[in-house]
Length: 267
Image 1 (cartoon, rainbow, N blue to C red):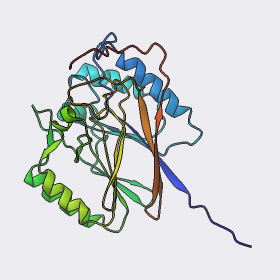
Image 2: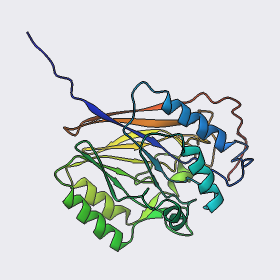
Image 3: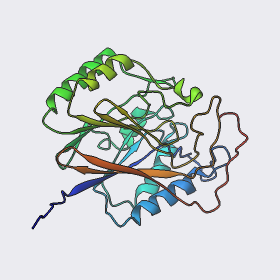
Image 4: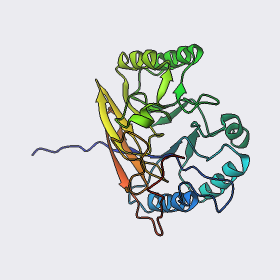
């Protein structure tokens, strides 16, 4: 008799780029981003597999105001899953930390995995980057966590996703050093990000690369100039196994009263 043992997995949920405004009537390109976030959170809650952890990978707010973060936090109150957040280029990291000082640790343990939560935001810029000090810190963390499979979670894409306009706002300062660093670390199994408002899946050597759709407006994959996509909002799940393997997928959410300005040339 051949009996195959199925290794249990820990489920992680990634949501990103909700762009919540401080006022209930805030819209992004004609879309009620508060409503779409509510719908995505409801879809996650209805999943048959209960997640152990949720991470919000940046652009939590539309403009970094205290009112926007307080509104987001009210929407997260029903979420029973432990969750953390990262800043994006639309966020104010200091304000996030003042309101929720324990929501942004450097490292989170999930089973045998370790999640490294990196801040790629650069004040006053759309693109992301790492200073030399930050790169030194990342190198030390990679060394300290070498006995665990590692996922890096961040806001900006470290590689081009094929949309010319948004790739102009990717991780810039320190990018080459970061790519060299992670490529030489065998225990880094995956890097996942937001920012691009679209699904992307690729590979960098031994590392899986993943971008996650926004809970709000979607951008068109492969576009030259700015373009709004007809795909619906969504979220990404990861099933992480202790041996360092994982599965991942994107779930799109059917949003009631979904209305976007598809003719927009930017925001």
